[in-house]
Amino acid sequence: MKVVSHYSDIASQHFDGDIVKGVTGRIAIGKEDGAPNFSMRLFTIAPGGFTPRHAHEWEHEILIHAGSGQVFQTGEWVDICAGSVIFIPGNEEHQFRNSSDDDLVFACLIPKGAPEL
Image (cartoon, rainbow, N blue to C red; front, side, top):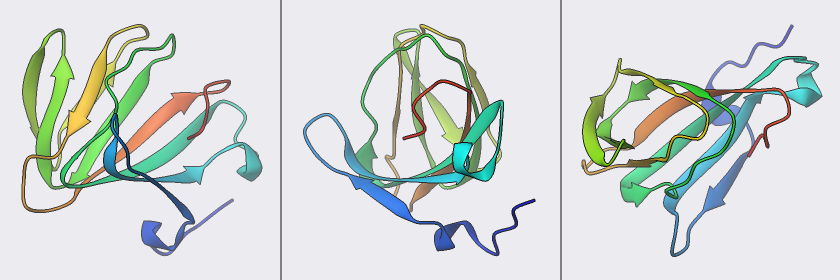
């Protein structure tokens, strides 16, 4: 079993460039924890930040923990906020952006075999 007092205690990796801006990623539960089927990642997107627009073969299950912003879905931006739940099927183009003044924080589950970060 693994218990973390607060997700901010988990080691993080920061991403900032032309295709990704203001994103911090953490592996909350993964291969190193002995999780055989899924990994749980936590992302924080700073105000004005965004993830890269991309697609891949694996699915995502996402829970928005805090903040608000938008997710790119089938060619349109859809508003999301704390409490929103999102399912992204494999091979669907997607992107997240934070258009608010507060951090956008979400948990993202991915299946075994997908890159953890």
